[in-house]
Length: 103
Image (cartoon, rainbow, N blue to C red):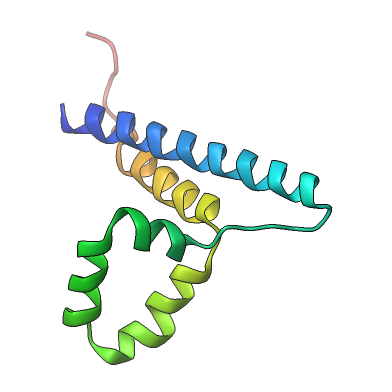
């Protein structure tokens, strides 16, 4: 059950990443210059309470190089990586070596 939910949520996050890529691509074509929306805009607008909690509770050495670098990445890249990670977690187990798969 947990594997199914992880796979379903991973596919939804991956689809959202693809939609964000299409939106950025359309905006780039319309503006005749590359336009990538940073993850910080989504993070600030949709998850303001989480942002406050992270900035208050995270160690300063983790905040500056790690979190700020993550917030500068495009939305589609962050969502695609998160979706692929969830799908990787939910992958089926490899069959055991030396065991018969027949009943």
